[in-house]
Length: 409
Image (cartoon, rainbow, N blue to C red):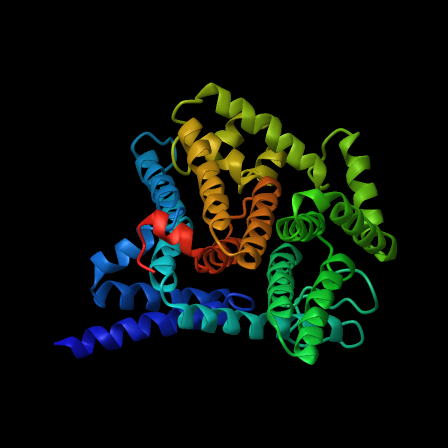
């Protein structure tokens, strides 16, 4: 009677490892492996034990509350049921995060294998970005040659910038943990190449800001407060050098500033975000307490959009995950989503110093992505943010933090 359950639990762990290997380059593969994960997890039993593991992680309850609000939003939504169902499926990442936490929080071996699987896939993506400077790779999404421009490979440049930020953090982590000089140098080189890829070879301003936030959070989490002024100066020099050497950052930032001062147009990047924010907040203030209901944003935005062109441009999503939840789930949705980040920071604060630095940086990346895009709702970005957070937030806690949490050491 024990054999099927042991096999299924092993299958669940293997499926999660395969998912981390798939996320950097194939959405279909990630979805298939995550479906296998859910089936093996459900059929494998030991639900109470797994719930106890997941419950001890600070982000579990905010994730469940947020998904509960998404479910309840169907009771009063103005959206058709097919749209509601689509939202339930898109936000199932929140539940998948809890399942993954239940598997990784007390299984360090599987967690390291997930990190290894992700790192291998991300390294291949990184190498492909650099090779695409000279050759048009058949598997590369972008076909730009030469230094600069967009060299994204399997995902769009925003999603790849998230993946490269995670790889940069992993490289820094392994470099600082390494006891052998050549290993330390190799991982520092990986971190540097990932940083350069994000600042020189990708085209997204979200990626530029997320990378800067990741570097700043990582450094400040490692350095004592009394030396923050030195750390800030070094980070400022590093980021200034990246800006000056990049052929894309200055033009992209200049274009964004120019768009800020112009009348919003559907063909620009900053203009539509300002338009979506203006009319999204208008929708929020019309129904601030519960929102318009799950899936209602699309129809309600078109109802108040000034032209059919703006309806077509903004009805898919508002390019701001906080605003998305505010419109559809009101103040409770906003508070629940903010609580996920607050809980993530609390969980990270109880870790060892190096794990804490990686976790703070990853939370910063996810927060930037949620402010500039609908990072959780979108399929590719959502998997990168969600499962990146799971990896960094299931690191072991400090012994005193474990004792305070009631977790056996």
